[in-house]
Figure: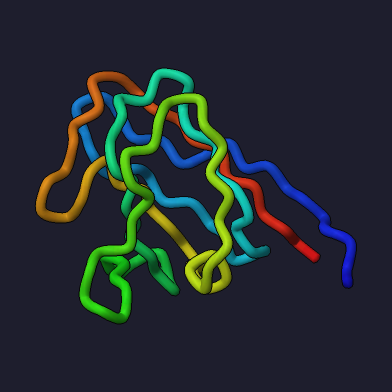
Length: 117
């Protein structure tokens, strides 16, 4: 089994008054962990992905439900172990869901940990 080579990315950021983050390039590895902002307003965490950083698509499960991490708390580390983590390319984070976005009252910066092995 290959030894993990981890890279910490200090991004993306959801700006104050918004629910959707800036984009971050994850093409260099597989997402293995997301570190939540210290002052995150508790909400579901959903995603948009892109192959080219131009067209973005909301992420859904095969059964038609939106892919999400449910009610994630502030200052939490979320382990990512799904096909999602291997196929994101470029990614944006959303506070809340596609139909019910949750506005964050202040800038919220995430950290993404990639396995580059």
